[in-house]
Image (cartoon, rainbow, N blue to C red; front, top):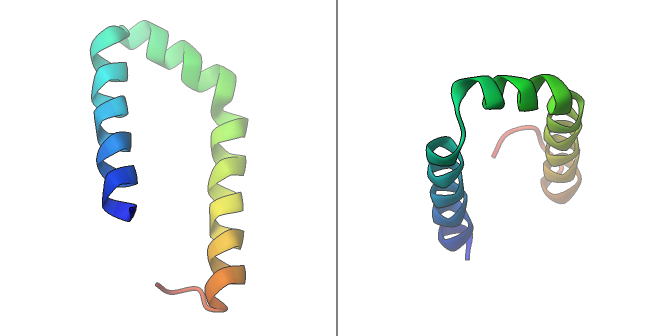
Length: 56
């Protein structure tokens, strides 16, 4: 299941990069950087709560 999610994410990233221009990606990053950082923090907290450690 983890491999399926990983390869799905890779495919979506490649499609996203091919369908957008550099200026569009820069504008999206400036608009959504807070959401990206919060999702990263949530993932970090989720891993800590599930495993009880900071390392995988």
